[in-house]
Length: 160
Image (cartoon, rainbow, N blue to C red; front, side):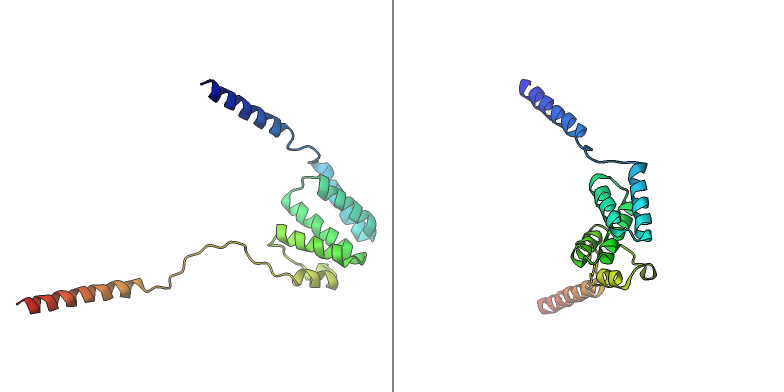
């Protein structure tokens, strides 16, 4: 009994300490969303280096919602394309498509280089499940019934 109590105390203290340190270093709330909006404005104004610095900081320290994170990674990749850094743009697009495989490319809003970089990736599901009806179960069962009936008739004819 003492051993069980000791294990429970260790487990509860681990959970208590682990739960208190889960969010250290992450910002949430409206300040992160304003950083993304400010970075979008900087990108529209042509200040790509400031946009990259703001988005790299926001993506590493902020806990953004999924849609805002996708938008921020797209802006970051576009800024890398505009600053002629295709390696970082390609790495960012690859990471974005891994995290958000259903990313919808709007070709009219982006540069041709960015569109080509996104289109070169083919996104496939890692795991899929489904049901295939390839066997003809009805005919298979009827075929067995016919064989059973024919064997029974042959046995009855030979026995008599």
